[in-house]
Amino acid sequence: MGKHLAGVFIFLWAASVGAQDTSSSADIESVETYGNCTVFDQVDMLTDKVSHIMRCMESTITDVSEISFLVEDDGTFGLALSKGVQFHLDDTIEIAVRVDRRELRTGEWTYSTDGSYAISAGRSALFSALLTEIANGERVAMRVGQESGNVRLDGAREAVADFVQRIEHIQLTDY
Image (cartoon, rainbow, N blue to C red):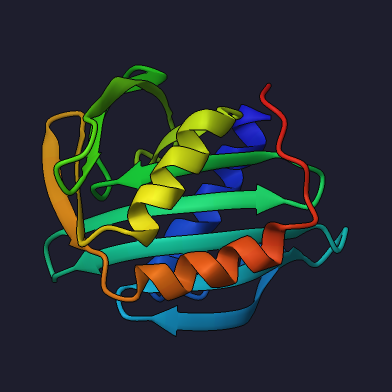
């Protein structure tokens, strides 16, 4: 499951920087933008498997900060933090994430093979808590490895409502 989610998040990264990845076999559909947040579906062209994604991000020419939530129709789910591409040799990386002045969450997450995402998969309590906090928050701060950043949550309430509506038929089970 972890390698599959890493692949989805790698494609997500390519979409986030506006690149058209002709080596990918997935389409982006039903895109809705709410301030700094975007909700969309990613459909695998070979299997028709659907991944529902919500992403809140801010970027400049030299920096990107992003938090993303992903749920697939089969119940696979996860969330990711990105501070852009980093050179990191280990399979895991230390993270910290906090919405406004709420609980600080730290830990070791899986690091994507392309060096752009820290991924936490299959942890429904964390997924739900952060999604709820983001819907009601103003800013999320994060650290991935040695890189820190933050994202204003403009439009997050509407984005979360859209995302939750898209995934309400899916049972999330920890794995």
